[in-house]
Length: 303
Ligand code: KPL
Image (tube, rainbow, N blue to C red):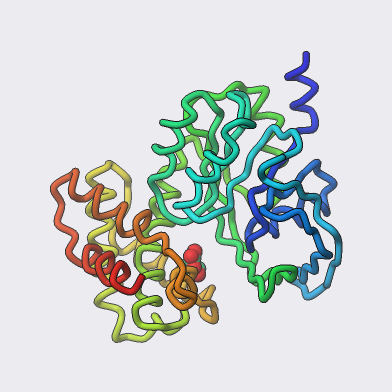
């Protein structure tokens, strides 16, 4: 009874108020969902969001301090891959086995980590191509509409799915639910595995990678990733991955990738979860991936 009524209007908790987290909070506010941002400091000034058609909205987002969250049913983690475990650790006294955990970040490798720590929680992995930019802490600009791919990991009660999926589908639409999300995560990994390190190493916008001088490198990196994916039985070709990368290069031509920004502002990058993940899977499968290995080393040197 208690579970049923809770599922009717699930309470969402969003970690932080980064670009994608801020955008999700804004959508929750617009759609009237019960949500809170879990943030480090209690101060909550007015948040100004400029949506994709250029309309400005000002509101004060619901927020709680992460060390004292209000009750929640679904915890969304739009954070860097390396922040996932520390955040879960910080919330360990509040996370119960029925809480749904949703991962939403670049790179792969955290699902295994979360499963080890929280073996029984319903878990969702998602990836989105929405674009948002925060020129300062309290301003958010929606820079691109995208697609969102989501999938449950493991068996989940159908009542739970029915209550959660419509809500998440509305946040960053169009949303595509997958029986097996891993192919979508690998395809996104391939995009990040090319664009992120190359833009960071050469100090370029995403669009500058369209220059012909990068085409051989893009192909070589994709070719290695496709070999690993094929060995894992994913139906993919190197050409498919190159086409996907080129589409993102064109669609986000004026953007700087997240890794470019991390290197520029001397922050930790997600390289271990991107090319690091690719090289470690390749090693398990005895596949040589020298181009990915080199990107990994170059970014580690820059960090
Ligand atoms: O996800 C991205 C990132 O910057 O991390 C891409 C797709 C490369 C867009 O910039």
